[in-house]
Length: 624
Image (cartoon, rainbow, N blue to C red; front, side, top):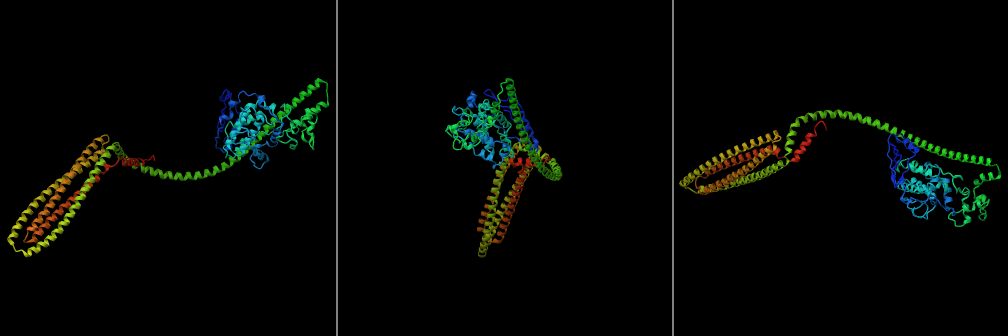
């Protein structure tokens, strides 16, 4: 099927084929009409309308092989179709304009018809729409009523209803196109339906579009067929001169227009029909007899004259047809002109709106230009910063390539640090508690010893005890010196560990491809640091045990003292102060280790943190 749009109207001379049948082509007039409604009609904004389904323009399988004459057979005896055709002649005219007015009589008549939205039944009947049913007759008349139903759903702006009924028109037209002009009195021709179907080939506007009704409405005015166009014109009945003469759904042959107005029954038709004020002059049209009676009233035996009269009659008919076509073309041209005027008005309105929008856009552009200058300055600053951060980004990218190793290293560092902090805190709490208890006990013991010293008068025993205390104090001093040397060793090892970690950090930042080897080295350093931390914890525990031993020794010595307790107490206090000094030194060492941990923290960052830092650094470039 040819697809016509506002921007391109390709024409395929053959068109797609289905079951050996070619889909109808859009006429040149239709293509020109579509092209004329292109950009200008829609305010310089081309619109792509919804494409019409392919099934609309294809012949159904059930219709193949039907006899045209049989498809156009119809019985008019019940007056139903005569009334419908009369209504069509009265109301089907200038529908593109009148159909938009819901108060118009033509619109009200169209809306009063019984038309299922899904086109499942024939119009105004309960018969299922089945073209295989051989009992269904009057297909040209059903084609015309299907067109009326399509107009109803156009007025209701139901795209589904329009699609369904236009599809029915196409299906029926394939059966009756060859016989409806000569064998049916409906006031439309096969070309009218074909042209109407071609209008849908290029797509339709959406129902909410202002031109939906005007674009899709039936454009052809209903016109009565002449005796030369059809074999059964029913010119005495169509249109009905007085509709009250012949009621619908009649089964009485003497109430049937096709019987009562039939001149073959006599000059006044069927005489048995005329009674109760109804007669031929009131109920039957007389235009059909004028031409025939004029010819019969002037008999002419001259065959040449009769031939001339026949030729003149044929010429007259051709002129009438040409005038009808010209009138139709003029109506189409007027409709296109009206559409163009409406489109021009719409374009002007949209142009004014676009001018206002252009002014706003200019203001926005000026503000944007000022912002661009500020952004350029900021981008220049960011570019300078980006250059400074380039080297660091490269180092971080190299480090990020070993994200898994860094995660493992981080876990090990965190675990070792957590253990060290727990042990340090525990030892510090224990030392503080022991010092407090020792001081308390010393005060109590000194008071006790002072009371005992008042009662005791054994100087010799005191001197021997004092000598023992001096010996013990000398041993304690020697032990303190050993502890001091051990602390010095620990300090040296801490300094060495700190230097090694700093060296490993600098090498990790300076090296790119060799980062994995350095990570292995850092792992070994972390393992060594963990072992050293355990050794430090053991040393601290050892010092704690020695302090406990000193305390016990002091307790034993205090019990043995019976002499000058004040001197002994002073010496014990001196020893306690020395122990506290050592504890403070240990706390200083713990702070140093905390500092080393902070120095090692850049190596323990997770891959997610490194990736975030990389993104933040890369996002500061001038390209953002």
